[in-house]
Each structure stands twice: as C-alpha cells, then as structure tokens.
Image 1 (cartoon, one colour):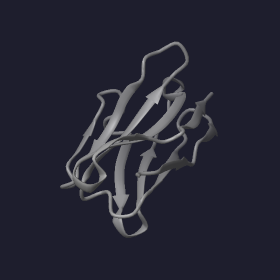
Image 2 (cartoon, rainbow, N blue to C red):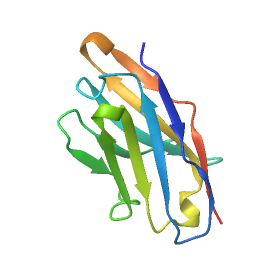
Image 3 (cartoon, rainbow, N blue to C red):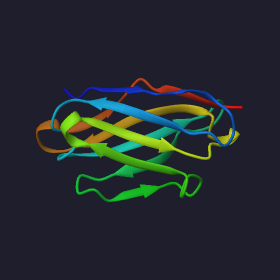
Image 4 (tube, rainbow, N blue to C red):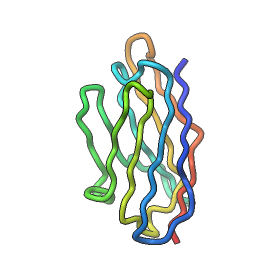
Length: 117
C-alpha cells in the first residue's frame, strides 16, 4: 500500500514562495508517475504538474516558469517549489501517484492548503 503525506502549505503574500513536500512510501518513484493537483473552492481539481518515472516533467500553463516539480529518491520525497505566487494559486494542493507493478493503483494524499493573499 502506497502512502502519501503532504506538508509545507501555508499563508503567504503575492510574489512570495512556498515549497510543498510529499513524503512517500519507499521505492515508488521507479514505478509511479507522481503528480501535484490543486483544487480551489468552487472549482474542479486541476493537474498542476507531473514527474514521470524516467524524470520527465510537465506543467499546467498557469504555473509554467513559476513552479518546479522534483523528487529526492533516497528520501522518498516529492517536492513542488512554488515561486512568484499569485492569489489565483490559492487552493488545496494534493500529491498523487499512478503506479504499476508491485504498487499497482492510484493513490492520493490528504492535501495541504496554500493561501495567497
């Protein structure tokens, strides 16, 4: 069973930065695509960024150039560095994994709140 635990959310002013961390179960990065999603009140959940098992990354247009997804395999941690935050980035942010092989399945963390105001 894969576990995902987010941390690092908080309240900041526009233009400031935050770094989210997702602590994962051991050894999942080789078999899972890792995602950051967000959901603002009254809006649908949005895919923010993905890092594939091979290391390739993708970003939503709304965060390109401002957010960076990365991982540290030995620490079993996934990150989302968020710079130049805007009020529109206010949302609950979720770590998610789509996995194959021994970890087959889709998994979600509990979310962490980011408020920019």
